[in-house]
Length: 556
Ligand SMILES: *[C@@H]1O[C@H](CO)[C@@H](O)[C@H](O)[C@H]1NC(C)=O
Ligand SMILES: *[C@@H]1O[C@H](CO)[C@@H](O)[C@H](O)[C@H]1NC(C)=O
Ligand SMILES: *[C@@H]1O[C@H](CO)[C@@H](O)[C@H](O)[C@H]1NC(C)=O
Ligand SMILES: *[C@@H]1O[C@H](CO)[C@@H](O)[C@H](O)[C@H]1NC(C)=O
Ligand SMILES: *[C@@H]1O[C@H](CO)[C@@H](O)[C@H](O)[C@H]1NC(C)=O
Ligand SMILES: *[C@@H]1O[C@H](CO)[C@@H](O)[C@H](O)[C@H]1NC(C)=O
View 1 (cartoon, rainbow, N blue to C red):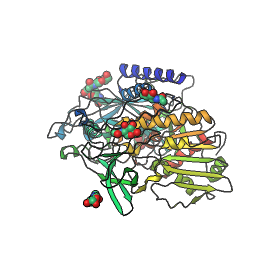
View 2: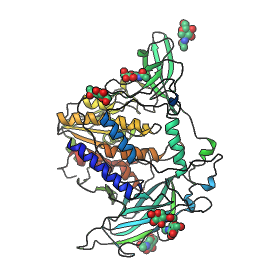
View 3: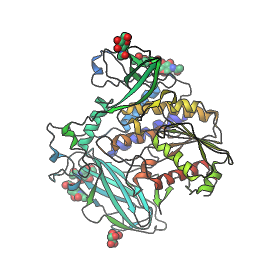
View 4: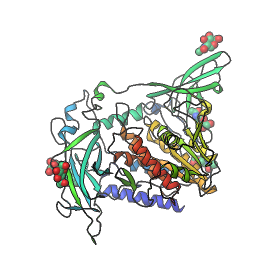
């Protein structure tokens, strides 16, 4: 209950902040937006499932979810409000590209600080970004997704900035100054506001644009049908594969001659490129999809040593700082945990006698693969699993270390996977006894990009209930959550949905005794190109964060 009060307080603060200022777009690394949570200890098996009926409103949003408990519904409302995106322009048909945001005609400028053009470590740097269209006319509305980073390549230093949307075509990016010397500003347009209009439409109208199929088989009869979180209503009967414990929805069209129980496997069936010809222009690499914005003047400043005795000032428009930054290529967390570097012998020493349960998507699988490669004593047991999905088990006999990886439950955009291997994270966590030698790591985000964010909120609510139960029965269990991250973009992949999932995740697990690997900031602050699977130097830093939470008392 205390936690709940705390959550509400936090929300109030957020709203106040929003009201007074503006809309916070982006990037905080900070553990900032984390939130509330409700601690429902009992298992409430409220099922959310698409309404498949003749109800007229099903046609627009056919992915309708069943009601939540009153508490969960309140939380969902608050979360949706906290990530509400500014209105974005309606798109005329045909689209007039000339009137949309153009990074090449847009600029940013470093604003003078409180010391004029002198900055010290501990100060904040503010940058003003003015967006214009392809004809060079200033934009009058907000909603562009901008990413900002401050860096010094020679020092291997980098930190994510927080972007504030003034809703009038201009934006601020605010950075914490954390190292001495040169600091260069980098501003990127991830998506123009007009593209976000398209992304909003797709996620509400075409959540089934990535389709799945299942093979049903019994004896010599086999049939394949289409499956998804929600299916378009037709005359065809459905198989309801909703998980009874978590309520996670999943449906297939029923095979004609087989029962629903005959389902054998599932796989991704199709991706329907649903961008209208019109809309494709809003997702052009090198034009308006993750493109740098140039500075109208200098793009860098020299940061002087910290001034003794001078209080640090907070920005008037940004309340939260970054969750960490790179220095000499090494991630340093801000606020709490000291991140240490772990080389192979120290990793083994840290994990000695422990069981590490990893759950989630391929971005968590990267952690398993990293440990497998880094620890000579760790042997992967051959379970004849596919490389993509697992499950995997690895054992270091001498040090009594067990590391496991299992993919999360549907939706999974993968090649064929046997049904019997599909497990929801919440159910897996419920199966753990927990304890001080148990480390639970999970990360789930990349396979939710085509759905309304409500699906993701519900998934996290069920996982959080399981985490709360785990920490109740075994308070010493180490729980570590990997967030999503900015990625390589295309007409299929957007950072917009990932960013919303990131904010929701941080808010929902705030106040619980869990640790975050802030992959969003760790990728954004780094100089390597964004990728859904961050490259090895970033993974190594994430593993250092993971091990620093697991073995806080150890040096590396
Ligand atoms: C699917 O099954 C769940 C759990 O039994 C149930 O609550 C839900 O209403 C069903 N949905 C449909 C559309 O039949
Ligand atoms: C779960 O939530 C529903 C919806 O609010 C409620 O009607 C039901 O009684 C709850 N069940 C339990 C076991 O708490
Ligand atoms: C941004 O645009 C406004 C209005 O046109 C102008 O007053 C301001 O100087 C511009 N700022 C920068 C940094 O270019
Ligand atoms: C947009 O709003 C900001 C914040 O209120 C203000 O500083 C800026 O001058 C405005 N820009 C334009 C172009 O109106
Ligand atoms: C189902 O069985 C009927 C009768 O044996 C057959 O004609 C039909 O082709 C089968 N349908 C499918 C989809 O296998
Ligand atoms: C910005 O960078 C350039 C090129 O590295 C350098 O010559 C210049 O001194 C820097 N400016 C400031 C203000 O640090």
